Image (cartoon, helix red, strand yellow):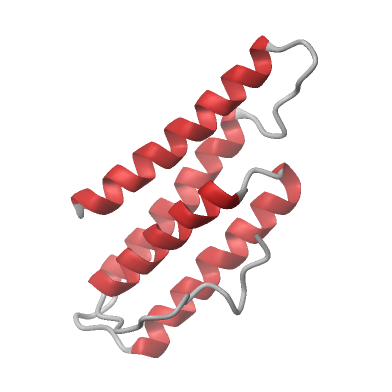
Length: 121
């Protein structure tokens, strides 16, 4: 988990909402969740790996090094979403916020969507 309280809060809310949706689907016999708890855990792990990689970069990190990590996390989330169909509008917004805030904490100065060039979700 990232030490920035804003990032930790967004992450906790995102994962909690994913789990709540999965539970609601389980309670409805006509519905089936498109993903499992294991895939929610995988999403958390992808985010944690990204945060840890950013923490290892020198401060301030070179923009190219930061963007390489952004690319890696987005491609990993693309692969997960392709298998599990778990990223909808709200999840996308939360994931983009997390990715952006971690990149900003690493020293990236950007105002645009830094995930867009790789993002399929």
